[in-house]
Image (cartoon, rainbow, N blue to C red; front, side, top):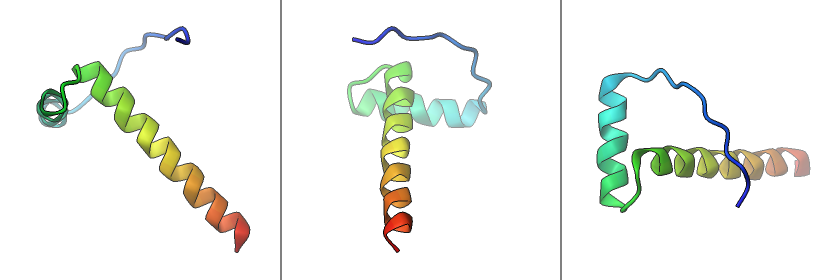
Length: 55
């Protein structure tokens, strides 16, 4: 697995609570859920970028 870099994240407490709950529902830690959401957003962005290039 690739080395991970730690950083500070400032986040709205209500958003954090939602992410914690969502992560628990999917058997992920809060950190794991945030990583998952970021990875999915990056994949979606790449797909969108490809569609724009093909147009």
